[in-house]
Every structure is written in structure tokens, then in C-alpha cells.
Image (tube, rainbow, N blue to C red; front, side, top):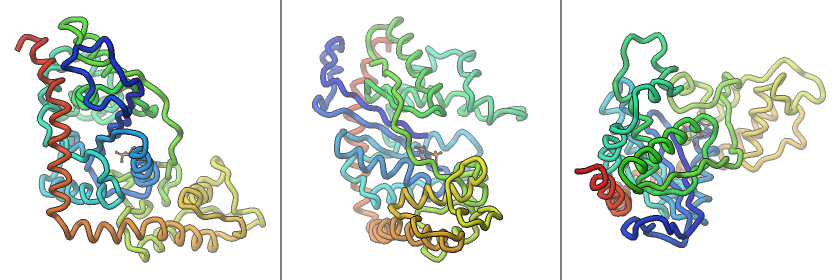
Length: 345
Ligand code: AMP
């Protein structure tokens, strides 16, 4: 789960004073990653690199949505290890200029979620696509799989963004967020900023090397030989790229983009370009794979090296996240307090 929420208007004249934004001069960006697997090249090119770039122009709240990892059967030790790994990875890619935090360290998220559950209906939650998909053919699911869109609404509303750029897969979640905010405001008073939905610039979409019609994913079926992990050693990257699916075309223009007919080759070319390489002089699949490997390794090696340093300095990572959680709490708490007061608590 990821969102980038931006607030472009510095002033919110219809907000009560105690809800005035803490940082009026910069738009705010919020994005939470769900620690359900090892981060991939897809996460890096599609999410982490744009997040690093966002630090230039926005007041960024980035973090790990550990509560959202509990909606399907999970292993506590694995979750803890993934949170530690991803926490260090966000620092390693250069996101420590942001407010970095772990969702469960800011209790306002689950506290506001409960209040929003009191305005949400079972009917609208039952229509959420991801619940219908993950629950299909299953007798019973965790209740949290049903209610997590409300937690996502709380994640967003606590930071009072005015705009939420979302891709198609998250659109329904933000529509629910708007509905809940409007309903709460209408029933109990003007507490939440109702965010507008905007369309983000198209991000790189990296496909699985072994199945180039599926997204390269960090969990589930994607976490296999066709997924390059952000922390893969160069020889592992080389092996995965060498085994990437191409096709049987051996013609002189075999190395070309054609998403319908040549999804594997197109994906390799996309990855190459996103990593700053070029296939201008490349005519064979063998040469393409070597060029892609070199470009990916050149892109990821600095991250891997920095990760090793950061992971060895646990105290630094702990301190970054402790400070981040403290700032996130200071921003979220007044909004939660206003919601409590409005609803009669
Ligand atoms: P997910 O790993 O699906 O929870 O997504 C976390 C973030 O990484 C989201 O911003 C996704 O859009 C992005 N992301 C995940 N997989 C890919 C991919 N294969 N290509 C591009 N972006 C991706």
C-alpha cells in the first residue's frame, strides 16, 4: 500500500485554528509501504526513487504500514525482521531527510480507525475490491481484511492532505476515505480535510522477469526467480536476468519494444532505460541481458553497500524512527483529539 498525499494550498481558511497545518509552506507527502516481503527493483523504481525525489519539494511522512501486514495469516518473527530490513532500506536509499516512522508507533492511526469504523458501513466495506478478491472462495477471513480500508482512511486523514495522487488500484480506497471524512464532518462537525483525488505521473512499472505479464511483486507469487530484490548481490541479479523470459525471435530487430508480442524484451528495455542504460548497439538477447545486468547492478550496488553500513548501525536507524514517530504523533494527535471531542468522547 502506498499513497502520496500532497497539500498544495498553504492555507485552509475553513479549518479551526487548532487544526491549522503544522507546516504551512510546503505541500505534504505521505506514503506507507506494507512490510509483507523483500523490497524489489519494482518497488525501488516505482516507489522509493520517486519518494527520494519528493523530498526536494514536499514535507514527507514516509513509513512502514506494519498494521496492514496483519490482515492475512502472518508470522510475527518474519514481520519483525521485514520491518527491520525495510526500515534500514528506507534510510539506505536516502529517505532520512523525511519523517520516517512505523505506523504502529503512532497509536493515533488505530485510534482514529475505530472512530471511522463507527461511521463506515458493512455494505460499503463489502464492496471493496481487494476484500472481494482476497476473500473469494474463502469461508472466513480475518476481520481486519474487511476493515483495513478504514485504517487506510485514518492513515490519510490524520495528516490532513488536500490532495492524494493515486493510481487506479488505490482509487477506491481514497474514495472511501473521502466518503468517511464527509460523513463524519456532516454528522459531528468540521474535523477532517476532504482530500481531492489526483492522478500521479505514470511511474515505471516493472514486470516479473519470469512472467512478464505480471507485476514484479514483493510478496505472493511475484517473490520468486523473476523478482530482483533490492538487496540481491550482483551475481544473483546476473543469474535472474540471464534467465529472464524473452522469445524465439532471432531477427535483426529482435531487440525492440512491443508490449503485446514481446512483453519480456520490452520489460528488459524498460528496466534498462529506468536504470539509465541504453540498448542502441544491442542486437541479441544475450547482449541485452548483459547490458541490463550491468545497469541494474550499477543502480543497486550503492544502495546495497549503504544498506550494509546502515544495518550495522542499529542505534542510528532506531533514532531516526524514534524521532520520526515523535513528529508524526505531534501532527496526528491534534486531529485525533478533535475527532474524539466532536464524536462525544
Ligand atoms: P506493493 O509492493 O505492491 O505494496 O507496492 C509498494 C509500492 O511499490 C507502490 O507504490 C507500488 O506502486 C510500487 N511497486 C510495487 N511493485 C512495483 C513494480 N513491479 N513496478 C513499479 N512499481 C511497483
